[in-house]
Amino acid sequence: MPTAPDDAEIELIRRSGVALRVGRLSLSAGTGSYRVKASMARTARALGIEEHQAHVTLTEITTTSHQGSSFRTEVTEVRSVGIDANRLSALERFAQDVEAHAPVTVEDATRELDRIQSTPPLYPALLNALWAAIACAAFAFLNNGGPVEVIGVFFAAGAGQLLRRSLVHRGWNQFGVTMLAAALASLTYVALLAVFAAFGGEAVSHEAGYVSAVLFLVPGFPLVTGALDLAKLDFSAGLARLTYALMIMTSAALALWGVSMIVGLTPDPEGPAGLDPGLLLGLRLLASFLGVLGFALMFNSPWTMAVAAAAIGMVANVGRLWLVDHGVAVQAAAAAAALVVGLLAAVVAPRMNVPRVTVSVPAVVIMVPGATAYRAVFHLSNGETTQALAYAVEAGLVVACLAIGLAVARMLTDREWGFER
Image (cartoon, rainbow, N blue to C red):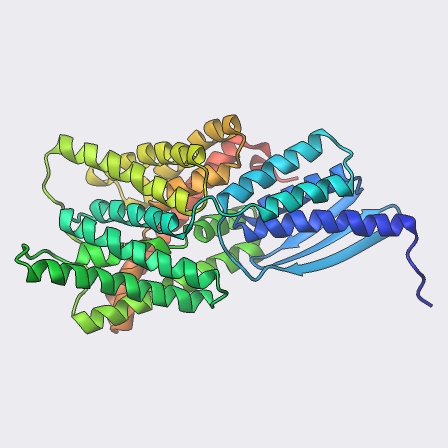
């Protein structure tokens, strides 16, 4: 016969529920499974739970909390996959506070979690679209686009991100939204340049722009955190994140391919602009800073966090481009740049009291080869298997090396990463 829980068991239920809520909020904000587990474990200890175990995937959490001879196993599902750097930072400070003031009561912890969960986004939809527009315009320059392409990408990416945010917040399917946003961004870009040409503007190449116009859809956070999960031997979470990222990129690439078939474009890489070396360096520094800044703000980062990420990303990305220009393999340059990002983030993030991932991932996202991945899907859709395979291998190697660089930096600066327990 089942028996009613006693007071100790009821208290365990309440405490384990708070720990699980911390994990759910962290997972919905886009962090890796290793960080979700760490936040839940710290909260559980502060609440007096003797032992806490968790299994985390992209959308699900299973936890077991032990207290004396009693235990409680709970499962929750997170259907909304997104990025909220401000929430991640708030949850990190919450975990630090409860750990420093342990033991804490369920009521106090719940009150603070209510405040964190109810905090609205830092930027309204129009500003969020502006950040995406700035980031993609910077990408257009770094992809060898000229002034006309940069301006066209600015407006096209802003329109696409505005549509994307509006539909996602209404609960639309993410893969369908991705295809719609990619189609709108690329069509807007082509239409703007057609209007420019109709009014007597100089004919320009579209390729550097109409691919850059959809790079706000590159799932940089899932790609990087998924690879880091694999580095921590968390295969269920890592493979799920990478699969999700691949599906998002494929959805965007298929929409881009459809538009290119309609308007007759191919996403071939542009040649260098032939600028003076000093001017090129200055523009690369500016574009790298603005690109990372735009992505960080699009991820709902506070300004201080975004500027820190932009400064780190500017140094690392310009160094990466310099290495590539001097004949270093793109994947080796990516690994070196990511290592620099990870080491700088290890110095900057603790001083700002923010999670490293909120600084390092935006700085690395600008190095994710979104244009190369889109070209792989484009050529695959056209049946050009050899070209598709070449672009896919290049993109995969670069992403893997970015993750390796960040993982090595963590191993060098964090004992939990350097040693298995």
